[in-house]
Length: 266
Image: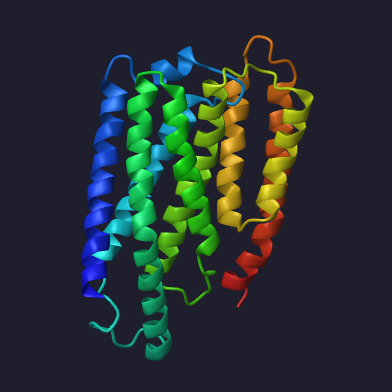
């Protein structure tokens, strides 16, 4: 497993640094990514500050995960003494490493895709940028679907892998619909069919997801609702998105109750 660990460490660090450097460039260049977003504001465009805030938190979370990949011994290495049941802990650590090593290439792919997305976004080549966000979004969603469930005894590495994968996939959904609206020049308000599909998608997707991923979907729809406020001709679109966000929040809250009981009810 030593080669796999080294490969995962190299992939995660190199892809993180690449994406971080490109995103930093995208914020300080002229025109920057916010300028391009404001000049191409369509039916699914979020408020750009929501993207900036999410990216800041995502960076901290990803750094914590990468640090864990470096500071934690791989399975079969040193095991701490006196921390719960040693056998259970060893199994959970091994499971955490297995999942992290499986996810590392998907994480790296996502970082490289988003770095490439920004390259085309700044050049307003939105079809090329859509291709890259599509690859990233579906890769991240498939990775999330493959994650084993968390339990109260799950290792910190497995928990961080869940958080990184689900935040990456959740914001990928927003990237997908945002860039898609821009690429197709789809102005607000959308057709009745598209609106109905949107109002149904977020609560239903949250209902089919774990609370963490559902909360990221909630963030997505709030970001779009705020981004559509004040758009000329949008009509009731932003208000209805707000109601959709409220419905999604209700679903996430209900879904979170059993999880909270599982972790804190004992």
